[in-house]
Structures are given as C-alpha cells and as structure tokens.
View 1: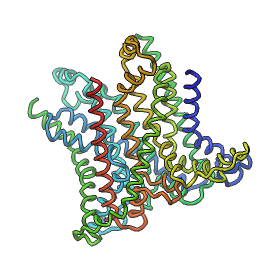
View 2: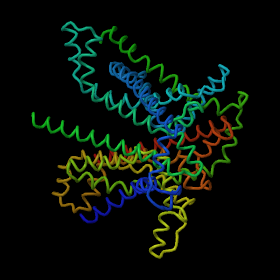
View 3: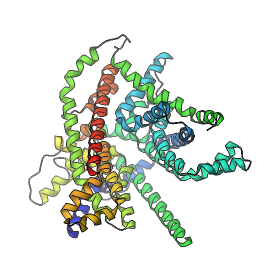
View 4: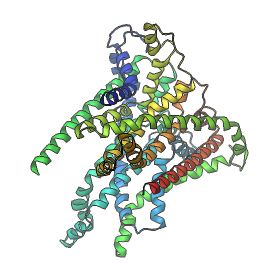
Length: 268
Length: 274
C-alpha cells in the first residue's frame, strides 16, 4: 500500500511538472527548436535580457498588479467593515450575491461583459481607443475585490466587537479606533487578500485579453501573441526566470514562517 | 445599533457598492443588451435565432468538461487522501508543490505540452528509442481533455485535501471500531465526509473547462472548437459583438444551471450523512 501510494504520488507530480521540466531544459537549447535538444547554451537568456518588448511587458504587468491589488485591498477592506455592520436583509444578501458573481462566472464571460461595457462607453464618448491601462485596472480590481472581501470578512467576524467600543470609551475617535484596534486585528486577512490579488493579477490572461488595448500589454498577452506563431526558446527562458524567482521567494517565505512558528511555540 | 453607526457603515462600504453596480452588475446588463440588438443598436432576435448552429459546439464543450472533471476527480481524490495522511510539515510541502505550477503562465505550460505530444515530439522520440511506433496524440480530442485535466487538476486536489485535512479522525476511528475494513472506512466514512470539498472541486474544474479557448486551439489544432473559441472569435476576429454576447449569455445560463444542480446534489448528500 505504501509503495503504491509513493508511485501514485510520483506519477501525478511527474504529470504536473513534465511541461515545466521540458520548458526549463529547452530554455538552454542551442538551436531554436522546442522539441529537439541539440546542445547547451545560454543564448536565449542573453537575448531575452535585451528584448525591450518583453521587459516593457514585464514592467507593465508588475505596475498593474501593484496598483490593482492595492486598490482592491483598500476598497475591499472598507467594504468588509461596512458589510459586517449591515443588518441582515435583502440589501446585504444582494450585495454578497453580486460579490460572488466574478468568482462563479466563467472568466471569459467576465472579460467579454466588461469589454462590452467599455466599448459602449467608447461609443458614447466617440473614441476608438478606450481599451488600455485604465480599463485593465478596472477589470483587475473587479476580479480581485471578491477575494479581498471573502478573506477579510471572516477575520472581522472573529475579532471581538467590544474592542473597538472599549477604545472609543477610552476616548478614541471611531476612525482612530479602527486604525489602532480593528485594523491590527484583521491584518492577517488583509495581507492574505493583498497577496492573493497580486498573484491573480500577475497571472491573469483571459480577462486581460478582452480588456486590453495595443497601447498597454502585459506579459500573458505578449506570450499569447507569441504562441500564435512558433515559440522560440526565448519565451521559455523568460518563463524560467519568472518561475525560479517565484520559487526562491516562496522558499524564503516558508523558511521565515517556519522560524516564526517555532518561536511562537517556544514562547508558549 | 444606533443610526449614526449604521450610516457610517454605508459610507465606508459605498465605494464598493458603486464599484459593484458599475463593473459587476452593469456589464451583465450589457451582455443582455447586445444579445438582443444588432450592430446599429436596434432590437432583434437574430442573434438568438442563429444560436442553434452552435448546438454541436455547446454539446462538445459540455461533454469535454464533464470528462475532464471526472478524470480530475478520480486522480485527485486518492492523492488528496495520501497527502492528508502525511506529517504536518510534509503536508505543507506537498500543498506547495501542487500550487507551484500554477505560478507559471498556463499559456506557456500548455504550449510546452505541444512539444511533448507532437508526432515527432518528446514522448514519441522517447517511445521510438524503446522500439515503439509513434502514437498520434496532438490535435485529438484526448489531447484537449489532457490539457484541461493538466491545467485544472490543482483546483480539484486543493479543496478535497483541505476538507480531508480537517476531518474529525475520531469519526474514522469509530468507523474502524464498528468493524469497518479499510475499504468500508473509505467508502462509508471518508468519502461522505469529504463531499463539500468534492463539490467545490467539481465546480472549480468544470467552469473553466467548459469555457476555455486557448487549450482547445493549441492541443486540438482547430478541429475541436469549443464554445470559448467561438466567443473569442466573435470578439477578436469577426467583431460580431452581438452574436458573441448571445453566446456568452447562453454560457452563463448553462453555468448557473449546472451550479444549481451541483448544489442540489451536495444538499441531498448532506442529508444522507445526517
């Protein structure tokens, strides 16, 4: 049984990692083929380092991810604080149902529906080029918001409501009571929402594809237009660089978390 | 609660309320609006009437989606169980390993499968060295389903695992004490208790599988059009937004119906457990 479960686990992880291993291997290919390996070379890495289109796309992706995750976290956290205080009723139920729509709708429908809205507005103001950074930012904030709200709301429910009241009794204004007492208590949820939004935004292709214009392209969109033709290993090299940097960040994050866990255990 | 704090909570939530109205609700109205108008903006039923031409595509999408979801379920369930039986530290590592591939663009990973599956690709040249004749894999329905399973498998593993990791093991022990052998313990005890994870896994795999367009283009070679492909073409190539909106509307209704069916099932199962 144990041998079986080992083999089974190994096979599934082989399946999950096969294309990534292929990609890492062929990013070092000395020819431009992505299926016949002819020798080791780092030429594609050198090439991608000097490819301005890819570098611009990478910068655009990061700018969009930072802006949209930050905006979604601020609006979403404020919304959660408000929603938590709403009385139960049709308004609250309706608002929560609306919040679920971007999560349950197929991504292509979300993308298409936003595109239709933007196209309609473009017609109204008589311009052909509404699609760009602004529309993408709106789209990304929209699909990030539900994730922020659904991670912050449970944290708010867990915090003791008397805390904020006690702070106000001690002479705190409601606003500073929020920043001094409530916000620190829900911070783990807020941070989780922020990180989730950031990664969703980095990775998103489908919704971006329908809401972006030629003036502002992110990495997934550049990759998409490149895979329409035959991909050269330079795209593989770029993906490998991103993948390895994420891997390193995750390992650091895990080590730090483990150390703080151990500290917490010791102090108990 | 006094009136002032009720007002305050509305004020705090108001940016989101406005945002949700403008960018979640309004776009859906535009899908309906475009479905029932022509390019000049006049009311028409033409888009809805032409939909019957796409019935085979819809049926293929649903069929591929169901097959991919079932394969994911069969593969993921044992794996989730195996992971949940490991030490806490090992569990954390395995969850990380399941999530890690999702951090790499799915476009490039799917493209990489093309290199693996081609007639002269990596798998076939490996088989050739073993003396096995090449197998034709790329541009088949099977390749499209493989792409779906590959891309969405983590969405099935993670929810099932997270339910299993929190299972009340005193229940499992009680099951064993009552004389259940390991097969019966799994069938009568572990499977019913992990239904919530299975249900959310099924929706998380089925929805993106039914609506995908990239996977079918790359691994199906254009001969296995899915509904997502048709919608994508209306918006990015033939610029027939009205027909595209009508197709999206049907897709949306389809997803709502299948979710309602799933919820019905999960409630029924829940009653059975009690």
